[in-house]
Amino acid sequence: MVKLKVAVDASRVRSGGGVAHLIGILDLERIDLFGIAEIHLWSYQKLLDAVPDKPWLIKHHPPETEASLPRQLLWQAIQLEKEIKQAGCQILFSADASTVCRFSPMVALSQNMLPYEEGIMPLYGFSKDRLRQAFILEVQKRAFKFADASIFLTQHAATRIQLYSGNLPAYTVIPHGVGEVFKQSPVTSTWPEQNQRPIHCLYVSPILEYKHQWVVVQAIKRLRDQGLDVTLTLLGGGGLRARQRLARQIEISDPDHQFVEVLEFLPHEEIPRRIAAADIFIFASGCETFGISLLEAMAVGVPIACSNQSSLPETLQDGGEYFNPRDDASIAQALKTLIDDPAKRAHLAARARKLSESYSWSRCASETWRYIVQTYQRVSRVNQ
Image (cartoon, rainbow, N blue to C red; front, side, top):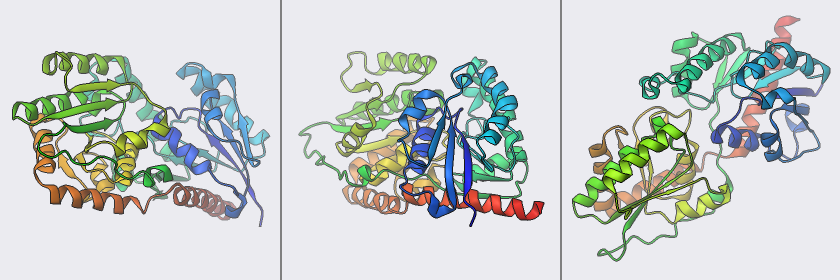
């Protein structure tokens, strides 16, 4: 069997979930088992450095990947196809679908739901970020239409995006994986009895407009006003505008800084320990292609209070207590349900952990590379 050389365009992969996905599907000892001889990876230097070296992995670092968005797109449109052909690659895998490269055959991966999810763009007002997402929407719609096949992380994403792109002729759903370190990090906290210590809630996610951290702060304040000793740690950096909004809300709800803690990004290896030490994990995002932080909390086995929007119910299923992320009363009620009902709390945590067992990076990698090879074979037969 002829083994393929696969080109991977990861020049636009910037989000934490996107980087984790790329590292996860490349964390293989043998790629030849899928009918692939080499993988050629185009990206910026920071991402290339984060991807472990493999004998079958060839990294390419065009200077344009470090440049402005217009220059990146110009490079994709004019140079990338030439570089792919010079490398002898036979199929292109666009690792986030934000591409204007027209190499064929191509498989496009959906990694961004922001322009597609109802009610998200207005959160950005009239801003540079909103214009950027509107531009990305048009780029991605064209990429999905041009691609010979597409990969989505959830069925929700596939359904929602096709409302904009139209029905796609070939696609599959391949969920994220989760690192074994999370499955091997059992809960270390013991539920506080009789107010021996505060109930500690943790929310791991970048501080962005659609993540609603300030609404979570309001919910925690609401619970404290009811006499519950609850604290909150928000873990993750974020955008300036959203961070300023969060800071204003903290000054209103917790002016003495007694119960809200905000931490910058921590090394990823510290995240499992932080989750395992929490009493309740909160995930209040209004838009997720998948929700990798949610899956990591599921794998640890901590009780979860989760947003009922976007793709999150597809991932968590019946393993958590749901709320409306824009409503602090709804968030507070979900947390109170977990606090007041030990049996339900334990059941949901165990159920979430059980659900997480079906997710792994080895499965994600295997399904992804097999689908890419199958797409090449299908297109080749049609073109014969």
